[in-house]
Image (cartoon, rainbow over the protein chains, first blue to last red):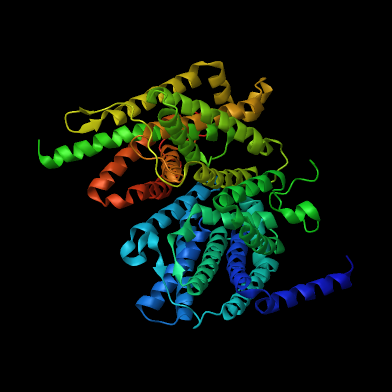
Amino acid sequence: MTKTTRTVLMLLLAAAVLTLPMWAGTYWTHIGVLCCYYVIVVSSWNLLVGYAGQMSFAQVSFSSLGGYVSTLTATRLGLHPVIGMAFGAIVGAFVGYLLGILCLRMRGVYHSLTTLAFAEAFRTMLNLEYKITRGSLGLLGVQLFPGTSKTPYYYVGLLLAVLALLLLYRIIRSPVGFTLRAIREDQTAASVAGVPLARYKLFVFALTAGMAAFAGGFLSHFLGVVTPDWATQSAMSFILAMAIMGGLGTFVGPIIGAVGVEVLVEYLRVLGRYYMSFFGLIVLLMLRFAPGGLLALFSGFKLPTFLRRRASQG
Amino acid sequence: MSAGLSMFLSYLVSGVIIGNIYGLMALGLTIILGVMKIVNFAHGEFYMLGGYAAYVSSIKLGIDPRLSILVAMGVVFIIGVIVERGLLTPLYAGKLDRPGDYALLMTFALSVFLMNVVIPIFGPYQKSSAPLAEGSVNLGVVMVGKTRLIASLVSILLMAILLVALKKTRLGIALRAIAADRDAAAVCGIDVNRMNPAAFGIGTAMAAAAGALLAPSFLVYPACGTIAASKANAILVLGGMGSTKGAIVGALLLGVFEALGVLFLTPGYRDVYGFLVIVLVLLIKPTGLFGSQEFS
């Protein structure tokens, strides 16, 4: 691909994304908003897992936490949803920070187990504290915009996603990003080289949790409801599938993965009750045969550094 | 005896009874961890499959409910071996940068897949397999359903068989050797790659046994393994990763801890106490009670 064709293609893509509500209809605009949500959640999870190497199964706990906090702030205190979203992000970042503190002492499997146990405990709590959360019924919330048009949500979502990606890009390209990768590759070596491990890990935990919570808050004011289903392992498997299909540890991969999987799932819905098992099967086959993601499978440009097959050993 | 004390004792006894079955689950997880050096995040789903296998065998096919436990173990053993051969072999091919993370992601994805694949087959509703026995037994302080008592005794028997097999049989010694040092075991002529399916099959069959034993009293439904798995994980941390003794002692402790938590705190949070255990143990004694790297 020459540079010109690439530029033209990128411009066409940007134009298509920017004008989507004008030609795609309500249904696909709705999907577009969901895509924006997933891009934020998956890309921030990618910073935590793909770049910093801190495996976590709690990302959807933070996005649902953001949804609940934001909705409660708007309904109980009567504040504007935007304040709710900001407050949700702060609470999310704080809880992420606390989980990070807990995980500091742990490595490898213990670390993953703790995040998984936290996610399960959190989901149980959402179900049980029905006086606050209305249990499995879910909590009805406040819409961000009056009226039924999805177009304003799409543009706000797009703006939020772009801002989130810019932030992540800056971090990844900065010395902080390099340090995070050093921690992923060998945290003992990084520590010996003078990296304050705790500070970096807590930073990335709090940041990614806060971003997920912010996205969750936005989604709750778009859908007008937040339920414990957001925090299930099935929901987490979506995040995981998106990141892996795109290529964990790459910047572009999870974005493509988020959009691709969300659209794929819409088509899979014709399978009715078989669709989740079919989706699960795709994820399993993906992991088994292309653990580096679809990008690595087809083009070979930008080899993902995560889960990559070692070239020397073939 | 005061009413309070007898209530305390009755909760204690039921905690021990359920703890034995947790032990079976945790022991399976420990064997997989010891030999393959992975935590099987889909362990709860093999428990669930065991429950469904017992349901099909005892209700649909009319096989004796006690025999159905063996059927469940056999069926899930085969599924376990197929899963290991099909999905987990890249772990040992030496081509992955981070085999540990691959195993976590793979077994997590497997758990979600299995949870969803049973929905179209059995439906989302709760099923119960045939009871192992009718009536209940008076243990002095508490009346225990015979089904639950038999389940507890069977799980003690299965754990005993497994521990003896690990100590005495050729296969058991080979598995322990691999758990202690994979490379050294290979040098000594043990075919280490053939032991992975064996370990995974045995470990998942243990989970299936636990699922089949609890299927008559705790119902079977697609997500029923999640809770069981989080308990097994808590036991693993509590007892010390890779220690068979730790798995059994940890399971009994968790069973009792939960029963007392239900008595003194709130019953609704019964299934969250496992998380509390994980957090407390990791903060106070990160190696667990009997922490070691190999079977002991």
